[in-house]
Length: 165
Image 1 (cartoon, helix red, strand yellow):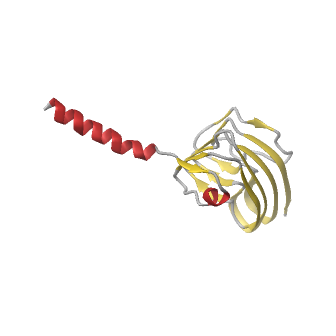
Image 2 (cartoon, rainbow, N blue to C red):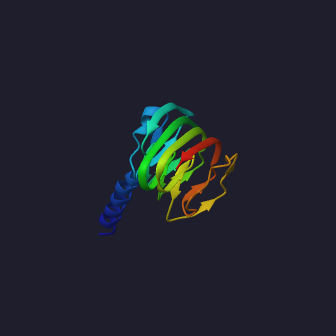
Image 3 (tube, rainbow, N blue to C red):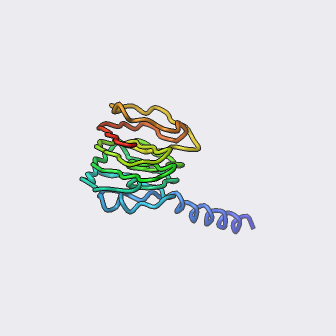
């Protein structure tokens, strides 16, 4: 009886380990395909290049775990928000998950009109957690609009230019 219980217990543990598996991210295409609630680890520096004009964040909503593993994501983007309310712009838009050990080097421009528009090179809006040990060269206009997200051991450098009216 004890042997059957042990084997059943071991099977449950092994099946659940798959839920914690990290998906490796090493290319721009892989990064752009991440899902909202996944568990990711970056394995190389990634240059997204100029992602063009976006009407939302590059990754709009993220509730999973993204471990940059000490690597860097570099990008340029123009964010256009017209008649928007509560919009978040940046590499990640609205984060309710965890981003850690990531370096971001970016150039972002936002223009448009609306109310409660948040922008940051790393993310626009953090919620439901805490910020700890984030460091780096933050641009003048960079801010965590809501200082409640879970970002740890990240650095951010670059510029944000805004012409919001």
